[in-house]
Amino acid sequence: MKDGSGGVVLTTVEEALRWAESRSLWPLTFGLACCAIEMMGAYASHYDLERYGIFPRATPRQADLLIVSGTVTAKMAERIRRLYEQMPSPKYVISMGSCATAGGPYWQHGYHVVKGVDKIIPVDVYVPGCPPRPEALIEGILQLREKITQGG
Image 1 (tube, rainbow, N blue to C red):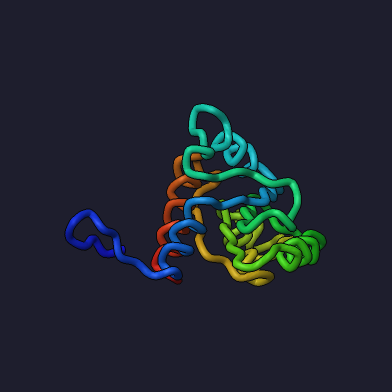
Image 2 (spheres, rainbow, N blue to C red):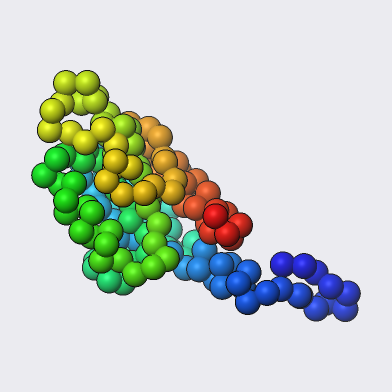
């Protein structure tokens, strides 16, 4: 947004829509393992994700953000893809934790573990850690907000 003289803000419709979209993310939380405990902590009153416009949804048809946290097994891969396909566009994905990002401690010998959720669906932001703290998830959400605002 450009600040003009006289207190007038000049912008385009696209910039205004991207700004509004980035400030009202509705995640479908998909907790698969221990990272889900930290994700639930981020929704609690101590961290209060609602102050950032984050309102968790129980159905993919109402969500525009999928937070995948925990170990993605081969059996869960198709379900994750199906949930992602049911989400309306524009849609975003956060991979939370080392298991969702790269298979975690099972990456080498775990035949049943997908070596990263990005092998199934596109990922916009990776949140590292095992498990990542709620502050790390909040930082990932803020990075996604910035990415949306920039148009990426």
